[in-house]
Length: 350
Image 1: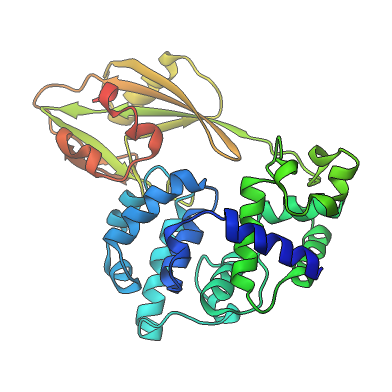
Image 2: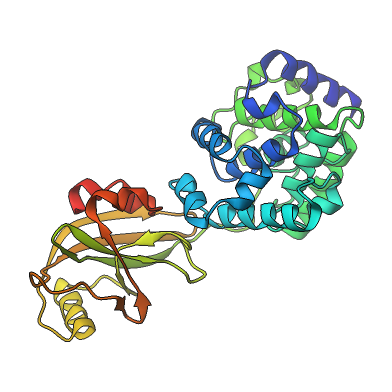
């Protein structure tokens, strides 16, 4: 066990990634980086981190920001609940803890949006608390090195890997150990085509010894995606367009979108035409102008966009389907936090 820790530490000192959040012991900056990098690759997350820290350099500025400001900075990262949780946790730290960041694993867990992995990362890196981190990279490394066939998506498997990670942990410098293990998984022990010839623990790796690296880690379930059809209505008049804020506990909560009709299956344009006429009690014509598919972890979104032929000089409605609308100058739409599928297609929609 000690040999494993020393080997990955030596490798990390020579080959570890140079990243801005590794040049500080500030728990706030480490927290922001860890949350951004959940479900996000470092290459993409780095730019978001730099912009986020530039705008919100400490917990007080984050707590004081508006939801719209934060969501705009998060636009394109997905999993928007992360941004809402950051905001809520920052406000808790400022209001209840006088702006002082929690310094222990147990207290970090009390903050909204911080689970065992993030709490362990902050506690070990910022405060030297001996807590192992177990993320996808760590699961992959440990399952291959020790040829562990327990599925990582079961409670039994998670407990086993947590115990093993704790046994392997360098308690004298847990932060460096955790970062070394994560980098090893990200740079060397990759999901496909692992670079075993460069791995510092290849001589210990049981999966490599039998040529079965691709069999690990083991999962008991396959991800299935729910299919959804979202029909967005672009309703404009004299250079202004309607947006609505998503408020339900669903994807993109807190972001703005064009009014939408959702169907459980693919439907002809005539069906959407009839829906539009029912909503507005008028024979408004629509024209389909774009169709794009967007894949999320558990959902397949078919997004279709329709131009609504709105009567000239008729005021745009203040509510649609009992949801309040925002009438926005077309030149200012891009300033609103929008789902990425809308943002990247704005030029052909408006």
